[in-house]
Image (tube, rainbow, N blue to C red; front, side):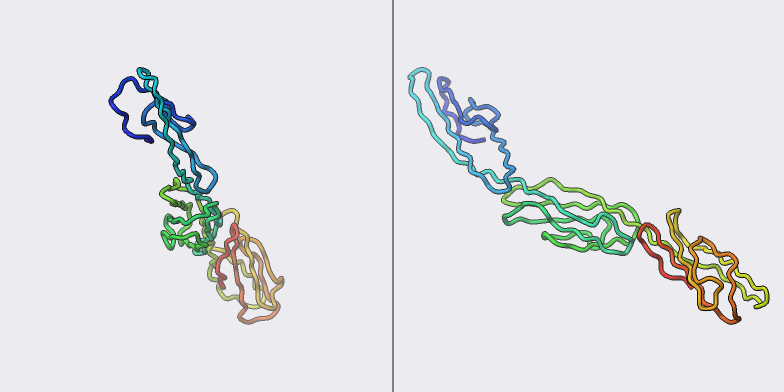
Length: 232
């Protein structure tokens, strides 16, 4: 409320100017609910005129009120990462006065932080996780600004054991027993002497070599931008 306690005089009438943001401009102590979207403190002047309907006497008084803005809690961040990688978050709002910045990273490492950033946060388990920022300045606090980051699983490449074969008429069928989903891409590579240098199928059929010996076969899987370790 603004204004002083009203005297016990039923003959007094009140008028506040301007009436903007007041719940009742004719009340002795109206409630002021100002809005300030400028990003900087603003001074707002209010005048009250008091008239005595019995004596016809009039008086007035003025007050200046500083209206501080609710801080902007905007930020930018990496929208999705692979498990174990780090996401980048940084405040991008309009706050140009001293403030405090409180971050919360659900399930992340670290789980929380302070300051505008940039901050780097990692998640070791796939899933969707919530990021929150609350900004406080000049006694005003923003509502939590919430966003979600997607942590994608890293596929696992694994080649089933291949039994030795005689060189004459040999033919290897290699089974991929890794962990991946339907979006996965496969990259097989072979040592020198294979009948073809590489392959992109899920499982490998009819691989042979032009000379006997121990030959190296590797498999690596890419899935939604996340790359497995190489299996040999």
